Length: 445
Image 1 (cartoon, rainbow, N blue to C red):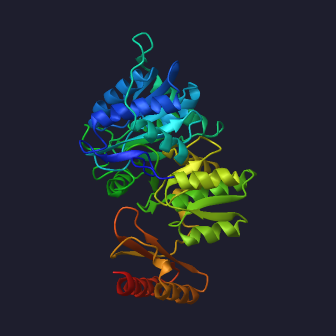
Image 2 (image 1 turned 90 degrees about the vertical axis):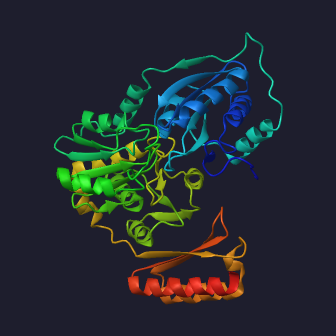
Image 3 (image 1 turned 30 degrees about the vertical axis):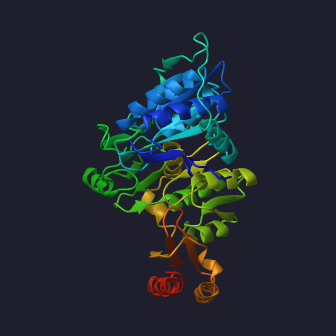
């Protein structure tokens, strides 16, 4: 269903430019209140990351919700998955997150959770957009929504995260560096790991409203790598600005991405006798992970890139585990959305139970080399619709002999074709991706 404002993860953009303006946020709050809460006697919970602009958008959304007769419980800076959890815990009609995730501070966004803690379906987002086209009307003075602040939100979420870790295990003896990206996890993540017994070294835990994701966090792990080596830590853990993505670093300073972490979680579930039929990844998931999962007797399905598509596939198949190489990992048997702290705890539980290092577990998967080239084209289109390009793809797939992949994906925002080849032989992959990119240039550029 076509939507004007909502993208794959809510409404997002540069602060001060449409649609991330206070007047739009107020109208969006009103529209969301009418659709998600039905107006009248209803409550939503609302949290944000550490961007300076969060104050502006929070106030504007609060005004719009109040006009619709919806009361708001303000959580302050909290990770996105915390808002999902607290929406369910308080039986609220909806949850709202003010965040632009891993983007720089000058961007911000607004995303919603339904009462069950899951992201909204396309149809609901389209209904909210339809209300944006209508004039705002204000409830009577005696029916306006109220606002209150939930003072113990942090403690509630810390206990929820700890409860996802096996009660009979402890992190005692582990030295862990935690990089919070100067973002929404800075008040909770270090406490979770230290309260479970780990010795915690904090980095990027001093937000000033402008430094979120700046040369830190899951998208810039170089600082974490250096800190792990400096502190001679066993593990490094990095989150993104809103706390729904995680990557880890082993004691050698080697980065462990989402594909590797998902495989570890799958092995742990099988070792514990849990029922697991398959795992959902994306078009970008490394083929080595797919083959490793199949060797474990598990199915593997690729969804489109984006956690909403991964969740949809998981729900359809009723599989509890899935995610992306970027570190957006979903454990739907633990919580309702991607939760970086909960995901990290699942990996740490495996290390503690087996008495092994992250380096040892990482060594069990040898990822295939991937190479991607962006080719600018005349206009956005399906590259596989061109017969000559499709023929080159077919030839390359035959030369990979089932031990590699080809992916051609049109950018959703620019006239670009993303050309990716993956396989066991790095030199062959480099040659093949150049060959395919040249075909795209000749026929589509």
